[in-house]
Image (cartoon, rainbow, N blue to C red; front, top):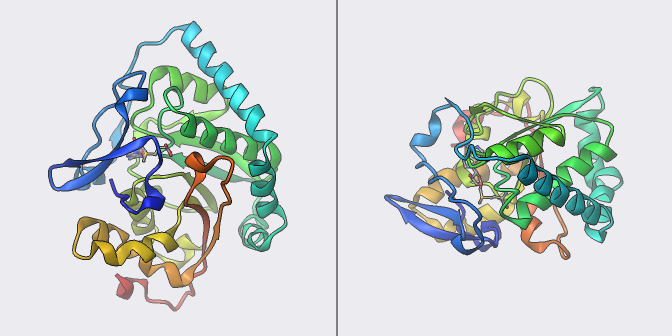
Amino acid sequence: MAASAETVLPEPHKVVKDDDWTIVLPRRKNQKRRLPKLKSAKQQQEQTHWTPTDLETTPERELKLMQKMQICIEKLEKSRFFTVFLDQIVTSEAADCFYNITKSERKINMVIYGIGSIESFDSPRLQLSLAVLMKRKLDWIGEIEVFDPIISLTESKVFEELNCRVLSVNEQGMRKVVDPILFFMPHCEVELYDNLLKTNWRYDSLNKIILFGNSFEKYEQHQSVFQGSLLNESTKRLVAVRPFTKEFSTVSDDYFRAFHGSSWHFFSVDRDTNLQLLC
Ligand SMILES: C[S@@+](CC[C@H](N)C(=O)[O-])C[C@H]1O[C@@H](n2cnc3c(N)ncnc32)[C@H](O)[C@@H]1O
C-alpha cells in the first residue's frame, strides 16, 4: 500500500512493513473482526474470483448495520459538508468538467473501490453514505458497483440493500473504460490508482474518467521525499498525467477523517499526445 504522505493516510490506519513494501492497515483496537492481510504490489496484478472471507452473518447483525448506515446517511445529508460537496458538483468550476463528461450520457455508472469495512469504521460508512446520497441527488448517476477484498458477508448484504452491487471479481482497479464512468476511490492505496491509469493509458479512455480519490497534486508534492522507493515507482504515472488533469479538492472540515486529502480528477488528453513517452 502506498500512501505515506500525511494526506493519504486515513486516520484509523497505521503503517506497517510487509517484506519489501509498506502497507497501511486498520488499527486493531477498533476492529470488530480480523481483516485479511493485503497482498504485495506484485501479487496485485492478478484479477481473481472473490467471495467474502467472513461468512458469519445473522439477520440481527445485518439489521444493526443497516440502521447504522441509515443514521449515517441522514446525518451526512444534513451536514454543511454535503451542501458544499454537492454545490461543487452542480455550480462551481468543477461543474463544467462534470457536464462535459455527463452531457452525452443518460446515466454514468459508479465503481467504488477500497471502501474499507463499513461495519468496523466511521470513515467507510461516511464514504458509502456520500456515494448513496450522490445517487439519490444526481439523476445522471446509474448503477453502483463496489469492491474491497475485506468486505464481509454481512457488509455485502447491506451493500446490496443500498443498491450497490458487490463485484465477485477482484479487478485490482484494472477496469477497462469503454463508456464514461465515475470511480469513487476514497483513500485507496496508490497502486490501485496506478492500476486504473495503466489499464486506461490512452487519451480516449482517460478522458471518460471521473475520479474521486487521493489528491494527485499532493502525491506530486510529496514525490521528491520518496525518491528511489516503490512509492515513487507507483506515483510515476499519477505525476505524469498531472499536466492533463484538472483537480478540485474537497473541503472536509466537519468530516476530516473520512474525506481529507480527497479531490475530484478529470483528464483532458489530446489525441496527439504520446502518453507512452511520459512514463
Ligand atoms: C487505506 S484503506 C481505505 C479504507 C477507507 N476508504 C478509509 O478511508 O478508511 C484502503 C482500502 O483499499 C482496499 N483494497 C486493497 N486492495 C483492493 C482492491 N484490489 N480492490 C479494491 N479495494 C482494495 C483495502 O482492503 C482497504 O480497505
